Amino acid sequence: MRKFAKSLLIFVVLSVLAAWVLTAPKFLDPAPFDQATPNLENGALVFAASGCSSCHAAHKAKGNDKMILSGGIHFETAFGTFIAPNISPSDEGIGGWSVMDLANAMQRGVSPDGAHYYPAFPYTSYTRMSPQDIVDLHSYLQNLPKSSVPSAPHQVGFPFNIRRAMGGWKLLFMRDGFVAEIPDDPILARGQYLVEGAGHCAECHTPRNPLGGLLMGKWLAGGQNPDGPGRIPNITPHALTWSAEEIAEYLATGFTPEFDVVGGSMVSVQENMALLPASDRTAIAAYLLHIDAISGD
Image 1 (cartoon, rainbow, N blue to C red):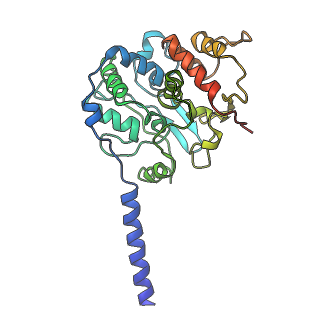
Image 2: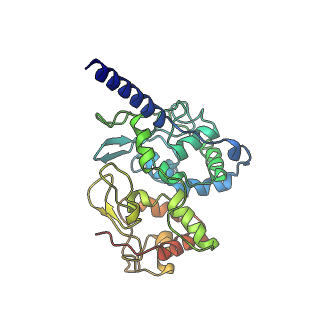
Image 3: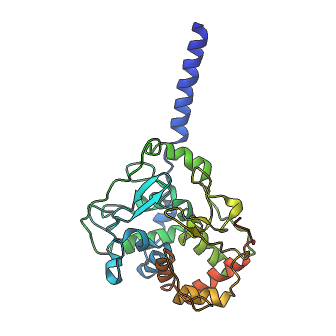
C-alpha cells in the first residue's frame, strides 16, 4: 500500500509539473518585428481591418470618439462576462507597451507580465497577421487620444477564472497558418489574409464546440452568436448567394442587394470595411466566393 501511495504521489507531482510546463505562455521571436519600419498610413488601415474600435471604444461611441479606446464594452458568453480593456496610449491602457508587448498579446494571447488572455480577444485569428502590420498598428495606436478610464476586471467564475488553464486551451485550439486552401492568386491571398487574419471573421461566423474552440470543419458556416442571442449567418457559398460586386458594395455602403441595410454587430464591421481600399473589399468578396460551400446545419 505504501508503494502504491508513493507511486501515486510521484505520478501526481510529475503530472502537475508537466501541465505547468505545457501551459506556460509562449512568446514570439522579436527578429521579424525589429526589422520592420513603422508606417502610420498602413497602421490606420490595419486598425480599421482589425476592428479595434468596435470592441475597445466606449459603448455606442460615434465619430472621433471611436478613436478613444477606453474599453468597457461587455461581452456576455457561456463562460462569463468579458469586458474590453482600455487600450489607449495612457498609463491605464497600453501607453507603456513595446511593439513586442502588442505582438505577443495579439499573436500569442499573452500579456506583458506573462498572463494568458482569454480568447474573447481574437488572438487565434490575429496570429495570422504579418509582423509589419503589427508594427504599423502599434505605431498608430500610440498616436491616438489617451483615456484615463481603468480597465474593469472580467466577470468570470471558477474554473474559467484560472488563467493558467488557458495555456491548455491554446494547445487544443490555437493554430498558426491559414485555413482554406486557395490557388496562388494575389487577390485571393489578400482576401484570405483579411478574412482569416486581421478581420477575424471566423470568430463570429464559425460555430464553436462546448469549450469555445472553433469547429474548423464548419469554417464560416455560421452559428450561435458567441456574445448574445440570435445566430450569425453562414457566409460560405452554401448560403451567400450574392455576386462579388454585391458583397463588395455591401461592405462599402451597408446596403444589401435587396436594399436592406446592415444591422446588429455587423454595423461597426461594415463601417470599418468601408475605410479600406476598394481592392481589399474586392479581395474579401473573391475569397468568400472561393471557399467551400458548407452547411451550417
